[in-house]
Length: 233
Image 1 (cartoon, rainbow, N blue to C red):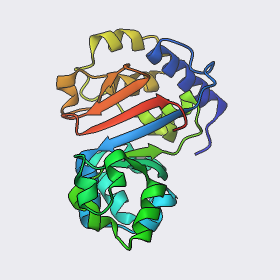
Image 2 (cartoon, rainbow, N blue to C red; image 1 turned 135 degrees about the vertical axis):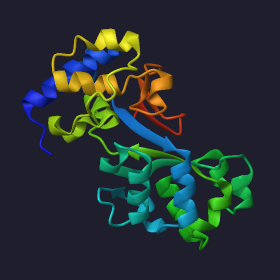
Image 3 (cartoon, one colour; image 1 turned 30 degrees about the vertical axis):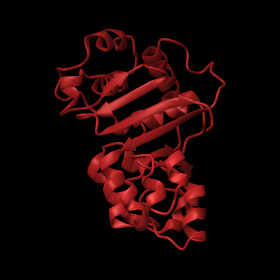
């Protein structure tokens, strides 16, 4: 979508309230990472073409349809992201499992681009390393700005017509509920409130927010985590 000046201003205002500081004054580069262990297990078990590990894949994920299907099953926001698989991070769940699967580099962790090259050189397929239970930090493709990272992490990049309603209208963490009252755009205010629920409420609705580091959202029992971090990686 094309981001209008009006909507961008609303996002900057809302995210500045959320973080407690102006986000538009920050010239550093930021990245968004998404971790869902169950999704990663399914992805390697079902297999996919290692050639996509150098790509930025975009909805509807025609080059790796299994990923699109799994994202839709596990998350409300992730199916609409473009994912930079080349800069995503892959690591064996337990040190030594990578070596046992024929890719010892997984024990220290590799990027998707590195993993794709290694698999190609050794004549391996992604399914051949599934016993290493690779943990994947999917990198979301953004413009690198803090506002852009927060827009992607919250799903607000899709525009005001795709904001979440606050349903149910209880269970918001009272600290964040009070702070977010200052967000001027009412739709964005409720969207962010839905993503700032208590841990108990977030087990069934929205997400739980933590400002540790930059910004972290956890969904359900913590089966998926979205994290904004500084640095291009």
